[in-house]
Amino acid sequence: MAAQAVEVTENASSVTLGPAVGLSCRECGERFPLGPIFACVSCFGPLEVAYELPDGDPEQLRKQIEAGPHNIWRYAPLLPVPADVAEKPNLNPGFTKLVKADNLARELGVTGGLYVKDDSGNPTHSFKDRVVAIAVEAARAFGFTTLSCSSTGNLAGAVGAAARRAGLRSCVFIPHDLEAGKVVMAAVYGGDLVGIEGNYDDVNRFCSELIGDPLGEGWGFVNVNLRPYYGEGSKTLAYEICEQLGWELPDQIVIPVASGSQLTKIDKGLKELIALGLVEEKPYRIYGAQAEGCSPVSTAFKAGHDVVRPQKPDTIAKSLAIGNPADGPYVLDIARRTGGAVEDVNDEQVVDAIKLLARTEGIFAETAGGVTVGVTKKLLEEGLLDPALSTVILNTGDGLKTLDAVAPTTGPTATIRPSLDAFRSAGLVG
Image 1 (cartoon, one colour):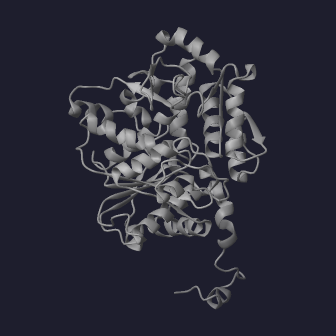
Image 2 (cartoon, rainbow, N blue to C red):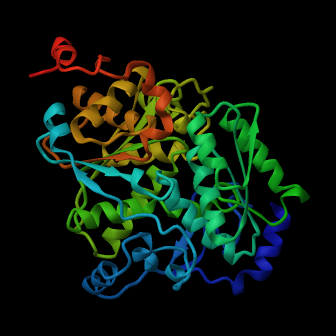
Image 3 (cartoon, rainbow, N blue to C red):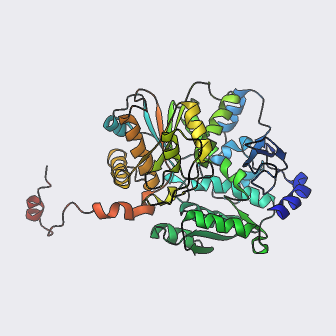
């Protein structure tokens, strides 16, 4: 990383990424030029993008956004991307449906309005297309020729697809035992897909070593050396939710937690909208959702700890199976600051929640979505989520990617001979 940092510092003045003006350490506040660096050289804290955001009339900015393309580039004035980003070859993710989930609300006893932000409608059917789209623009700006990542599945597919569209090589790394559907989707784009013997944390450590080796020269790792830019893609979920609610903040939002980056960036996006005057400020609560078999942040929250202790993942929700989440401590801070919570559910509850969402709203979520719905139900039962307030829950991926989770308990209602008598005998007429 050090060699890359020196090169970046020398060339930073030639980099233009819209309103982004530098990188700022989340811990000590030290500033750095724009470049492919992710940790502060003084305190090793994580870096994030610093901006000079528009300071004009909020109504004019609102109109500008609403006149933009029906994807994340409508928010280009608020993102670290060049002004002509919409004209470049990319997958154009975003502006997915915000479904008013009245059937699910009745089932759960929610009276204040329940919504599902369904990101399975993205190009590779997960929210990862958002973050990768931003990372691709950073990779272009810094002259990278290979796009890479460590992934629990969805990110691998998003990187493979986005790299091909952008004309870049891709080489992505995954745990060796991912769901078959995600492996196929990551491989089909024709880039290099490498299985690593171990869990996600092992894969991530390997990628960190590769960055510092000559083998990794010219490689942009979207969730490592491009992480400050990559993470900003999750802000677009906050922007879209508020715009789709008529430029209003939701009262409560339930977000799945893997590394924790999505939750922290949604909070950042909400705060930016308030600061820009695009929404009226009011209290909101943010809740994190984890699977019991990999719940380091939930465990720390319920114990009242500030330190997140790593866990060895053992859950069907493999897209959330990050035992040592980089943004875990910040998730704790946000949940506590906003009056939210972090909760977890077991594998059986995850499957039940996937089926509940499918049965009530016709949305087939992957296991991460099952975690979010399951945790929402549990929070309501525990009295930690107010049923009288407006609530948004996130479905971050398509259930077709995690069929193994529901296949053992899901199948034909009956198998009959092709005759009306057989159909009557099956007792299905009613």
